[in-house]
Amino acid sequence: MANRVTAIYPGSFDPLTNGHVDIIERGQRIFDRVIVAVLVNVEKNPLFNSEERVHLLREVTGCWDNVEVDAFDGLLVDYALAKEAKVILRGIRAVSDYEYEFQMALMNRRLKSSIETVFLVPAEAYSYLSSTLVKEVFNLGGSIAGLVPSVVEDYMKQKINSDRGKI
Ligand code: ADP
Image 1 (cartoon, rainbow, N blue to C red):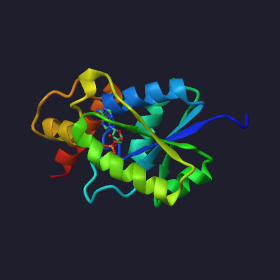
Image 2: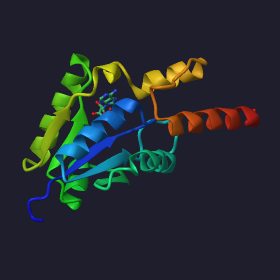
Image 3: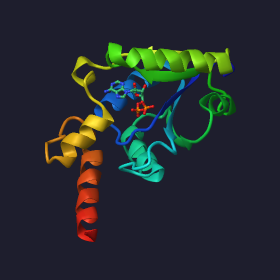
């Protein structure tokens, strides 16, 4: 029990993509427990609020017993300590992710040296996929089938229809 390793997978998940799901799946195979932690205050204009993002993540990750979903605010290392997590899990898509992720990993190490950042690489098919791109394609009327879980796609369609109804 004492040697169980908990990993925190933090992110905005606005929206959750199949790239994120790929990383969660790989993570839950390696770690005893994975906590997917939704950053509460991400951008000024999020597509989904944090409750919606948590809800969608729970729907999609419900099949894995060792995956939990939570929301957090503030310093990631403090949150990780509170959850007794030794690992911060991050996904690396391309070389372009590396610089930012490298900075974050070293800053987090400086803040709390006992926590290690572990990077996982997604399936090639998801290596170009980002939440921003999904939102752009969707807003322009392009198909996002296969890029996000179907429950997320349905939710996005509902959202756009209800927003149109308000205008
Ligand atoms: P952030 O806004 O903190 O980058 P995201 O929700 O966009 O949060 O991403 C959370 C984590 O998932 C980051 O480590 C990011 O690199 C990773 N990630 C995002 N999209 C993909 C993808 N398509 N494949 C693998 N990892 C990804």
